[in-house]
Amino acid sequence: MEAKDIIEAKAIIRRISMSPRKMRVVANQVRGQRVGDALTSLSFMPKKAAGIIAKALTSAAANAEDKSGGTVDIDALTIKLITVDGGRISKRFMPRAMGRANRINHRSSHLTVVVSDEV
Image 1 (cartoon, rainbow, N blue to C red):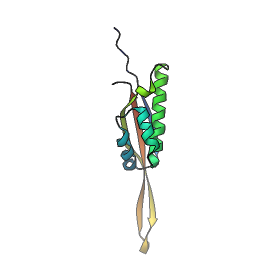
Image 2: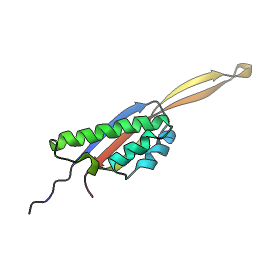
Image 3: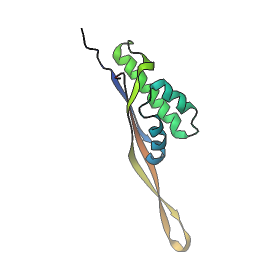
Image 4: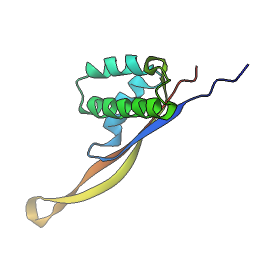
């Protein structure tokens, strides 16, 4: 008997203009789910991060299908790893009273999604 090859594929989105803390809330909801179930639940979430994660998840599933030559069943894929890391921080200043200024940090994120057909 021949051992079944495990297909793994990933998608990376860099410099998303959203703080990692906001994105992790959505990423934690879909971690470990099947791709179809995760896309369904993401479509009903009223968060901006849900659309971004859904796009990356669709891309990772397409990468898995391309990598396998079209033999992998997309419904059988599961989210093996989903990470949200911090990206660059754009520092801006807002003028305040009496000649002072407060710093405003515009945070960004890097999203990595790995899907696999491993059970």
